[in-house]
Image (cartoon, rainbow, N blue to C red; front, side, top):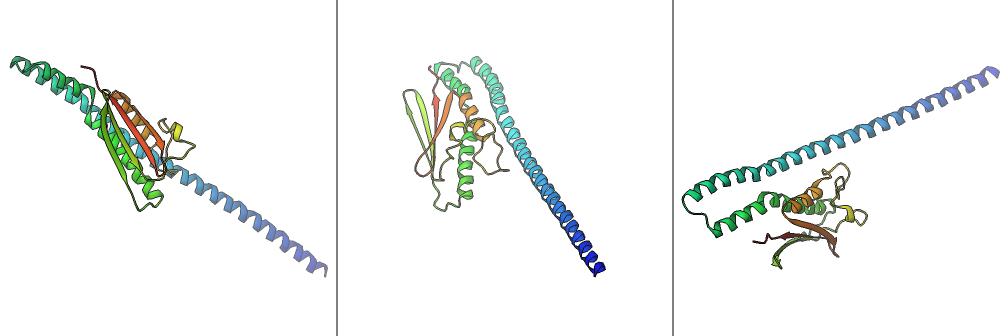
Length: 209
């Protein structure tokens, strides 16, 4: 009887020890998995950021290349007598606005809408773009029906390291870069939520000639 009782106690102790080690092992695997998942998400984000920076760097080189070419053309056009007030006015409008940069801004806004459509499984998708001028300003409105921007981040949406995308997606610099492009082109960008989605307004101040 004593031997039997001792064996039961030994078995219980071994079972408890096995359970303890199994729990520790599971915890370690979960921790390792979470760590690997975070590393993968971080690597994805860094890769996306690198691609974004390469694209922006390429686009920001274009104005310099265009300006260099325009200087060469200006010299030749001056020699041939083609430089007049209209020529200078047109040159000043190239100088104050770069279409490649503005393209990047609009593509970024539209891509954000597309991502929101996909993440929220919205089937009836709509992006309206309107443009008009008033009081020496150009107004460009981009409105979608993708559900809007979360209230807890909408006031900081143009700051770096703020994103509307799910964790591990996006670069956290898209809308921040858009605001920088708008500012660089003598403009501003703002946003608010409508009943159905986000409403962005870009205001470009035309240079006084």
